[in-house]
Image (cartoon, rainbow, N blue to C red; front, top):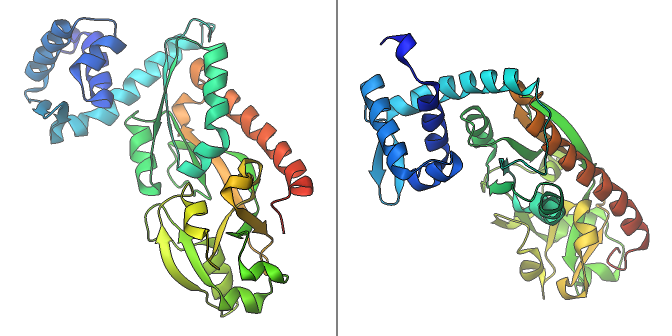
Amino acid sequence: MNFDSIDLNLLRVFDVLMRERNVTVTADRLCRTQSAISHSLAKLRSLFNDELFVRDGGTMKPTPRAIELAVDISTALSSIRATVDRHQRFDPSQTRANFRVGLIDYHAMIFLPNLIKELAEKAPNATLNVIPAARDEVAPLIHSHQLDCAIMGNFDVEDPGLLKLELGQDRLVCAMWRGSSLLQHPLTLESYLAATHVQISADGMSESLADRALKERGLRRKVAATIPNYLIIPWVLRGTDLITHCGDSILPLLDEKSEVMLAPPPLPLPPLTISLVLHRQMATDPATTWFRGIIERIFEEWQASKKSAWAESPFVY
């Protein structure tokens, strides 16, 4: 392979196709025709002596060789892009960037409506892709540039290539149906342990902060069910004496229709630290820096609204 004969645009096609897995979308992202992308793919296949992408239904599935190349190519392009961008002023009103953020439904409920509103006002030509990201998927997705960043709770970063920035902290509280018999008296440790619990876990396996705190005291709660997301809490709790845990950021979202009441837990629980995780090389990228600033401001405003809601809300026992 002659390095001098490599066209940088071919690597850009590879990088975008690796993220989008679709020739049509890749062509749109790069403002090129589908035939031009197909022609570039043919050159890439010849260059690397591999099929790289094979059609699988409506998507282009990467080969093992393509997956192997993806991180190196994305990292190289990011370095070049960062070098160029450092000397350019970012204008959100003109950008056509596609921001890709990984999060779970809990964080989506908290800040996604405000984020979409901010982008519509300040970057009307930009697009937003929200991708569900499990803990063990975050690092690979960021390294392969399928994610620009991820919003995670109590996320440990051991990868030196990743950067973690704290956005705020949630206090873990107990959530119950407003007609629950448990709300007839203050929630004690005894009544808490005697109750039946629902655990929320995206992967169905993770040990919760509450379980760890109980284990340290030689105690254990009765978990009858594990559910994958927070959006179904009102329907799971309704008409029952079940208890579940959630962060207090959910408080400003509650209304009469939810029929959910929150109460402080009867034992000290560690806070839930919410962080923004991104590639260290992208920390100085102008578009990423601007997008990160939007996220940080939204979370800062939410933290303030949460404090006032806790003092005034009719949904706190």
